[in-house]
Image (tube, rainbow, N blue to C red; front, side, top):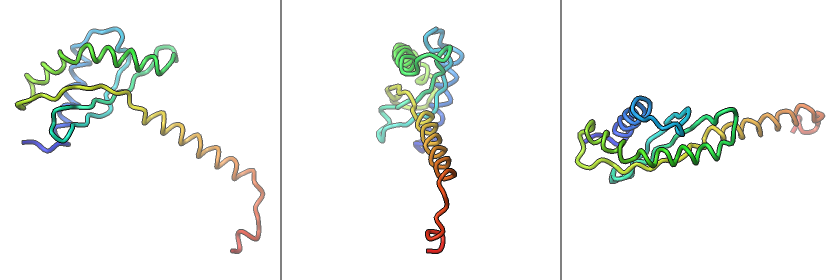
Length: 130
């Protein structure tokens, strides 16, 4: 039996290749799988993805379209995983948009605003001594 992290990496690699080479759904767009997390009993694989909306469109709408397209392909992907993995039971695939990039960008923006605010604030000589 493989360690969970190694199995997650293997599933991630196989799914990425399958989606890139085998799926022909125009709704998938520019898709990147960011992570795969297996449940403790390995019956469910949460697959996280990011997708670039065409022409700078609505990110949430593109995430929803991509999630539906991946949901339609889940049976095919799972059967392909079964033929390539040495497991008794192949995990059920569930797809989720990965919001970590947006969260990171938002935090960066907040930190830049704080730094800008600090730069415009006058220096208090009493605070520096204490």
